[in-house]
Each structure stands twice: as C-alpha cells, then as structure tokens.
Image (cartoon, rainbow, N blue to C red; front, side, top):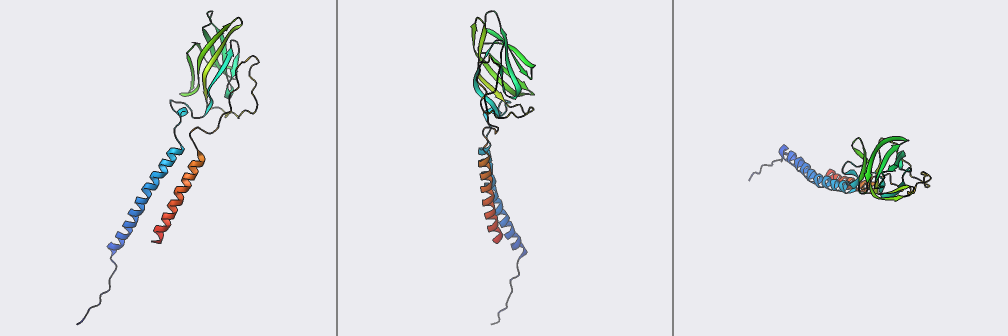
Length: 212
C-alpha cells in the first residue's frame, strides 16, 4: 500500500487570523486599562466647589469674617483693599468700596444681609456678605461674613504670608489666612502613582504578548 507524503504548507489565511486574534486580544486588554486610567484621573482631579459658578479653584480667603470701621479699610491679598466709606443717618446702610493700589474698582451701598460680588472678566474674585452693622458715636463697625476671595490669574501670585501683614492702624479685622497654591481637589501624588501603575501593567502584558 503506497502512502503519499504531503507537506503541510502554512496557510496565509491562518497567519492573518493569528495576527488578528492577537490584535483583538490586545484591544480587549487596552479597553479596561484605558477605562481604569480614566477613573483614576477623574478621582485625582475632581471638580471643586471653587471651580463652579465661574469661581476659581484657588481660594485665598475661605469663608472668614472681617470687621471694618467706617473710614477704615481691610487689606486683602493681591493688593485689594475693602473700604467702608461711611453710613447713612440711620446707621443701617453703608457705602463700601473695593480698591486696588489706591484705585477705585467698584463700590456699592449695602445693608445687613446684602452680598457684594466683584468679578473680573466673568471670573468671580470677591464675594462677601454684610452680616451685621454696629452703630456707635464714632461711626459704624461692619461685620462681613462669610468672605471669599479667589485668585485673580491676571495678577501676580501672592506669597504665603510669614508674619501678620500690617493693615490700617485702626483695622479691627484679623489677617488673611495662609492659603494653598495648589488647587483644591487635585492630588498630584495620587495621579502620578496611578499613571505609573497603569504603565507598569501595560508593559507587563505587552511583554507577554510579544513573547507569544
């Protein structure tokens, strides 16, 4: 009985099919990696309350209270000053003015419960509320609370204060608090660790596929 020997010739279609399967496997692996990486970025860089409603994420004064007498001013960061120019005869409304480098920017007449907002190019810079107006023989004392100041990106970044800044001699306000230069809600170490972990896992699986 004669047996014919046949040599199996590699099929080009099988080679293409094998390459296609490897590509599909790599694609299916890449999808969850990209998905996990996106979740990690979303967790590391989350939107903050300061970034909503047109506000900046870098907060310089975060809900503090300040006191200013009529005829005096309070020195804010980035060279802003909040002046209380005077009060009406009843002592229930005051004229306040926001200045920078002794130049008037915006003013308003406000009473208890009123909110004063200053924005620059649709970016909110200052937001404060008149909580209480105390009358007296020498004028009025105004309590502003809460007070929020946001970084104006068009101005130089203020340095973290080391000592108590010198406000006006009769200013009864407390100094602005030390602020963080980093935006709230952003954790750079977590982001870097997440990226490193994803790249490490991707490299391991890429090596396995290459050996195959």
